[in-house]
Length: 262
Length: 116
Image 1: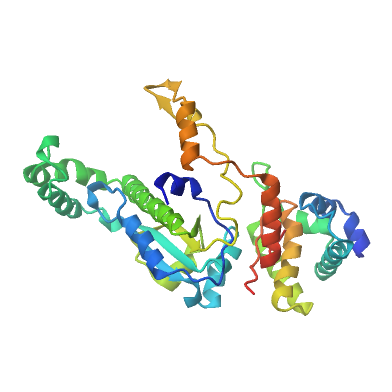
Image 2: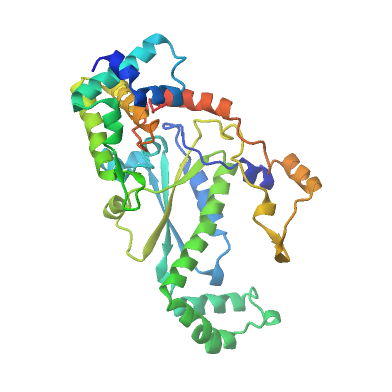
């Protein structure tokens, strides 16, 4: 699928084919996409735990339910738990990775980088003070993990899968999966083949970018060029919004199939 | 309560309007009324009382769902389904019909999905 089409086709899928297995190769593709995400200092902030629903006992599935995530756990064949590994917040990690990037020319003298700078300045003057602030540590770990999650989601769409980010009962998750204390839970990505229209009848409403983006100063909205907007519609990045009537009919049919509240 | 009495209560009228159930076949509508009436008997509460009992008022004076009472309600639905002898798909569907009534009255509650 073309890149813009993938972005345009992504939806939060909430009805999955419960018994259509998700190929491990597709999960690997998602994880490799996550692993290609931008990351400061080339640090491995993100961690993921892939769990196949049918490997869990019913008590565990029930224990993972929260009011906002219940039936989805019955339907989605795969759960991917994403964490921010806060053990990254170690100056030696940065020193090692930055030196590797310098040696590979990814960080280079053109932009002021050298082994000497890493060894003698950047870690002591910038990295260590930054990592002493827990708020910064949490912010950096979660934002970098978020970038990885997003790439995994787009890869899933490209593979014909449906995805949706959820919160589950992490007390249960901690008891069952015993993840380390320094792994900060971010999101659980539910994965499966959509039982609903993968395009859910259209894109969710989005406000114009001119209400959110500015040009050169905050007094000047970034106005869309209508010709570009048309091109983006042609490429599939911008699609029609949901037709509420058709969607209501589909939701009702899905509710009846799965015995869910209408 | 009889199914007819249940059908006339404001919260049930609201449910049918919100979920657009009024145009359903009469048989399906009666099934819903009857099921909710039986659940009301099970709990000893009217439909309006079921909804009101799940709400609390915050210190700021706003209405909020009581998570604790919602959990108890969910368990009560499961108990009712079991006591009524529903099994398999019927157990899931009928429990979720009760939840649908609550959902359309502003109570965020989810049930299980039937996987077949």
